Amino acid sequence: MLISDFDYELPEELIAQRPAERRDASRLLVVERESATWRERTFTQLPEELRAGDCLVVNDTRVFPARLAGRREPSGGRVELLLVRELEGRAGEERAGRARVWEALAKPARRLTRGTRATFAGGRLRAEVVEEREDGRRVVRFETDEDFDAVVEESGRMPLPPYIKRDEHDAAARDFDRERYQTVYAERRGAIAAPTAGLHFTPRVLEEARARGVTLARVTLHVGYGTFAPVRAEDLSEHHVAAERFEITDSASRIINDARASGGRVVAVGTTTVRALESVADERGRVRAGRGETSLTITPGYAFRAVDALVTNFHLPRSSLLVLVASFAGRELTLAAYRHAVAARFRFYSYGDCMLIK
Image (cartoon, rainbow, N blue to C red):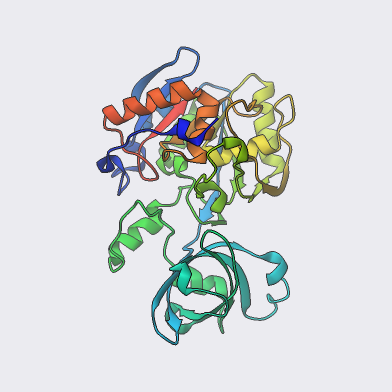
């Protein structure tokens, strides 16, 4: 299929710039695959859509403030780096000291060529570009006299997607995003984007689900460049999602497999959770514990083995996330539901409303 088959019209005013006042006050579009119908609810009603014996699977990755603003030397020109992934092979020898090597998205990339030096965090981080890669990516060696992670945590900014507009001098907005662009169950630091379907959950919603006999399992997939990178190939058979790190513990796999064995549904929260589960599922849908990297790319025709239902936000046109959702629900039904959501003035993208596909 072609990526152009996954396009739709979206008025700019429906791109959410802030989340709902309360996390669970967002709207929920419940899509029934068998009947090809949908109905509108609110997220507080999600537990009513679940059954005793179901297993709700969430991604507990934690977003870190991976966007660094700095100055190029010696000109003082402004530059920005979005830390994408630490290069373990390069960084291993450096960890004993104060140097770290990362792949980063550079802005403006044309100004950050090999050998360019820059400073960040008011000079506390010194950086040198050591390699140029495609699509604005650079390999950057950082040096600091302090703890690298602590400096990034203190001085970095949350890596909001570019369609969310912020005044870079608005400290209150930065503090707001540090809290709201993070799930309430975020635990394991390592993501450069939020698993946004999880942003709607509150402790109350989770407790009501448990009270209905729903179990909860946590898996980890550190959302990276692979999740949000644009699809540049017109033919989807030529598109491949970049690898991202994941882990599924023995405890999580046992909870998930017990639910399936008892006739319950596995309800994945977010496309990242889907990719983690499907990467380790056998032909019977049983999930194996393990850790590693997954570059699983889900396109129409994929046979889902582990996931029975999906909670997901509304995604960008022509994105790999929309393709995954359409592979699960069917392209025609997905796009019809999206058209309804546009007409009904649902809010879209990371801080927007969401769907439950059953």
